[in-house]
Image (cartoon, rainbow, N blue to C red; front, top):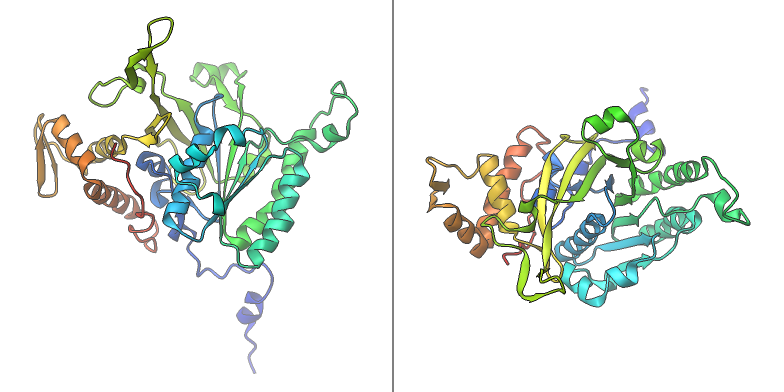
Length: 371
């Protein structure tokens, strides 16, 4: 009597059955261009990890907050857990800011800790137990991994004791421990990392002035690496029609108008799951969060050929047409459903060369901000 070896193998711990498509469910932000940088998935697939790195105050934490809020808008049962190793949560995620992002504080918990056991052990044991009990954990945020202290450093009596390699080894061991938990319970992880000056002259000549802080462990652990920085060009301080992102009714002691927002640039520097090098740009307002989403839809639509230009004046999408950029932008701004149609077509074109199992409707529970 023939034995069913496949059935026996499938019962073993860790067997990859092959009937799960990790790209069928993704973590998105309200920014279409940030989602676009992931390529065929148009978002961070649950089960996998994204590292956000860049200069200080560049927008890394903002992207994490926006993803948390989008999760709560899309799924009324989803949970987000954050480990704030830089101890800024009370100032960054106030009640007003949480409402701005759409974060439901009843399904969001932050721990202000920087000891490695209070991060990695907590994920490996306590979060795993909660997931086992039925908690629908969708996202774990570690902001930042650079802020986690090394084990030997914590045990030292003075800061004068040098601990070469301590931080890198601590992070390596910690990431190894949480990886099986992440894969088993299929939650996504977003990690922020600080930046360091790039000392390699060759890289400097290529225009790379900074690099991600951290050892090789996090480079091997994560699947997506996104560079985040303020767009400091003049266009980074105005909308697509040239209107400045400032309040002219008030000014400072230097007679400069109050800045109300700015644009943030993200680049998918590396990926083991999708294309590399895609750039996204979104607009952040200090009081309203991510705004002018219609401008992102317009730019992506034109640049990817979804919105066509039969001549220098006309813009066309399907059976709709507009004379001039202002008219097209206004149509998009006033019609969120039109934005969704263009996003759907952009996704469909990416999916033609991706996984057929991913439905273009996935993630389109977005609520585009039209202001």
